[in-house]
Image (cartoon, rainbow, N blue to C red; front, side, top):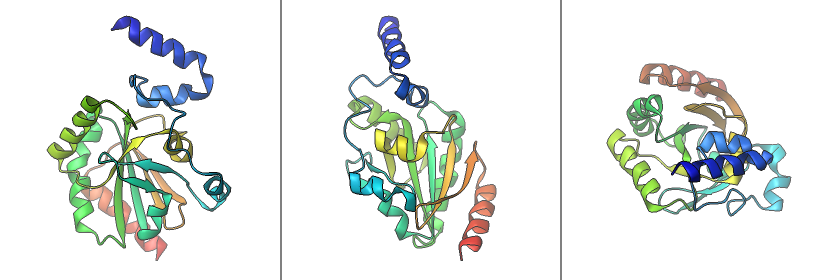
Length: 195
């Protein structure tokens, strides 16, 4: 086990372009590659000036892209990890908020920063179990290169939450966990600003 981790950290150190990704995800996923799948098309990259562009898959294998932002006035993207107690402690409140707001006003999306697209079944099952336990019943995306480069390149801690408007522009960022009332205050303030 130690040898495998040592090899992964050495690989990450040698591949300087993905070093930040290694620290975000833990570099512990043996069966996935950062460079595989989930890359935005050249057309999507050309449109990136209009806002965030990504393509990815949720835990159920459904494809999602940055087009999802157009469906709600405000999208809350919560980046979390399966090992992160503050992340898990705020997820029940996020699950409640997801059901309390109209979808055209607010949608919540989770990004599991330590479970990569193509991860083994045990990693996915761990994430699924935590979602069930916390009642965070909203889409949760698996990390891939497209999401990393499109949104998460500057994330240095979890939880980190981005608020994104219908055009795919980040309008606010919160680092750290908040309680439900603080999230409600933030959401309502941003919704009023976007009206």
